[in-house]
Image (cartoon, rainbow, N blue to C red; front, side, top):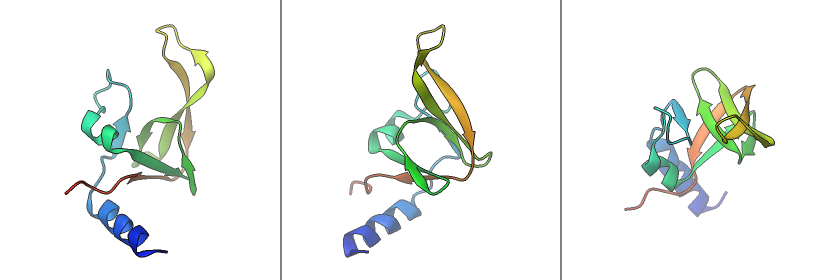
Length: 94
């Protein structure tokens, strides 16, 4: 692990992320400023890049299920259960 990676890990650890976050603007769990900074999700030990919503306390993520759309034109999602670990992709701006 390099010095930069260590500093990045420490910066990401000091800032607490919400228990639940959603990428859908209509959701009450949507946070535009936090999403702009870049949130990564480690799910059962591997990084997921197609997560639409997560909940750490309940242990689930919602991921896009192919190209299917629901009746409102939004992508269909599937709920997966397991260990969820959110992290910041970029260190905070000072």
